[in-house]
Length: 330
Image 1 (cartoon, one colour):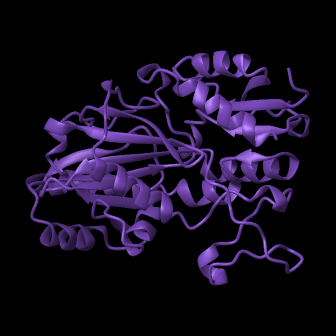
Image 2 (cartoon, one colour; image 1 turned 60 degrees about the horizontal axis):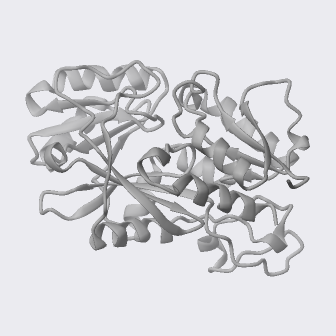
Image 3 (cartoon, one colour; image 1 turned 180 degrees about the vertical axis):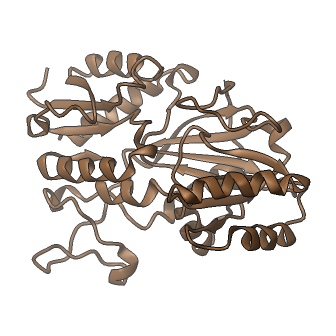
């Protein structure tokens, strides 16, 4: 048993829904770690009591993003947050897909409508550009397919009403062509711990025509284990390599805020002006992939904040994650 203490961070609404918590708890016990499973917004918690705060199922943040990011900043000052604050800030808004595309990563084509813009004109421009018979509208800040909807081109009025509702609430809208190979092939979610591939699962198609967006914490998912192809793993690795922010090297702690390497000519500088160590791989990452019209994998989402890791579908995966957490305490 170590003297360190870990906060495994969830949300009150997710505690009974997160199937990863129980196997992770068992695996942390096996590693001799002391930990508490805590709600991120519990005002009674003294975060400085913990040596590490591991983000897990904070799934209600999407409707409270500013509050959540303010909380993450406070926790980062009190202890070590993983994944780190700058990664969370970047990853909680799907505008990151544009960063990945500009870095040359194969991604699903993504177009954004911002509050105050002409939604009707931008929707028409999107439909003119993409010849797929169906498309998806969703908020740029969202999780679990909440407020995401699949439409046919003939349903543009309904899609516009959906988009306008989001825009009126101050939320950016993401438009993507619906790549129909997902109906047969599903999504491949490739999961990495400490930068190394751990396991993968298949998700069945989530969005069905005419059903309307889910109002639940997340849409019901049909999950099975999957062995990814070499090409899927290559694209997943491309996405990880393109993340513009890393986890600070051990020598750089407790300075947890990491400047984008691209803005420093590839060298990260410490606050005192010295050269900082090479960033660590992130503790966890999940890359969700689907096939495009040519059957090539492309990134649908890059999950670095609170992804399900689907331990029950991969023997030893919870233990691998617990071991990666344990290494963060050394």
